[in-house]
Length: 314
Ligand code: TXA
Ligand code: MG
Image 1 (spheres, rainbow, N blue to C red):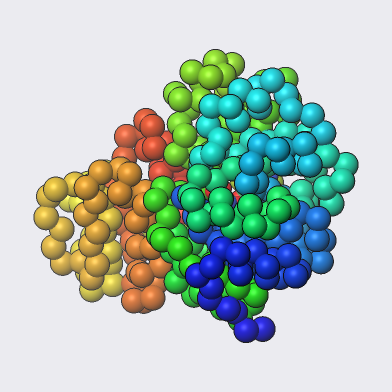
Image 2 (image 1 turned 30 degrees about the vertical axis):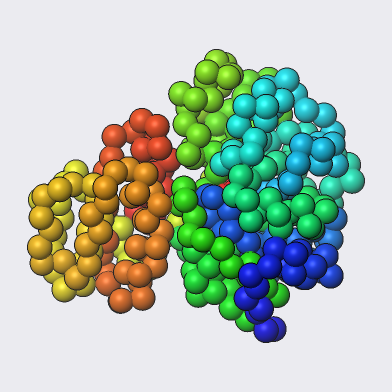
């Protein structure tokens, strides 16, 4: 299959409407989209990524008017979150509309809904005229793509098109909140932090999977965000082991000498924005160890530490 690189949101939308699977930018990470009502295209998305079929997709919308196409009902907690944070880096899980095919939600009776904020994404989604289901546009298990070249690295020849856009501003995937149960649960931390969510929904709790229980978010059980190199978390650069095949990323000012690659980030937001690209570049350079500085777990630091821990888990 030839993968077309497109600059026009309308051309990308036309490709999707013709049954194609098309990657597109968002402010979090790039997604790989198919029409929510096109089961054949949805199956092609799972195949292109090598994604386990038990992992549900997020439906992306251009406007609030599309919510009733996806949701059987909108719980009050979900409505509050949508009013406050749409458009933005937030996914809200609600009971699924019966017209949504099983393939999209991996058979779950709920569906995650997100309205991205990036203008080019909104243009693309509006031109699609249907909700677009999309996982992150990486090969399954690899770091999420934060620029269109990363999508091409992973999926060239496996998808119909890539809508070219800017590098992702956030760099980590959306916050996911499950509003389908009695108590709203934070399934995946992201740029919208627990503190901000709790100002809207004081009852919100972080979801902690218990042994023997069905996992609420199937994506949580799969290995994620990992480069091929071994990821080691360190308190500071002084704890990292320099060497010709070793890398370091962190927010510290202290000098980092003797590493093959170093990324010193201005702040936690810049760290989050750059970490997945750094992982990919370290892999391309054949490095074997990537030392990542731990960050305080408040605000965006919670989401960043979540991704770093998953990348470090073997
Ligand atoms: O920022 C993002 O969310 C990006 C962009 C493209 O929107 N998308 C993304 O999709 O990260 P993906 O498929 O890589 O991660 C979606 C996560 C998975 O962990 C999945 O299990 C969970 O959301 N999820 C999706 N639908 C769900 C549902 N109905 N119930 C529980 N978890 C769900
Ligand atoms: Mg993903």
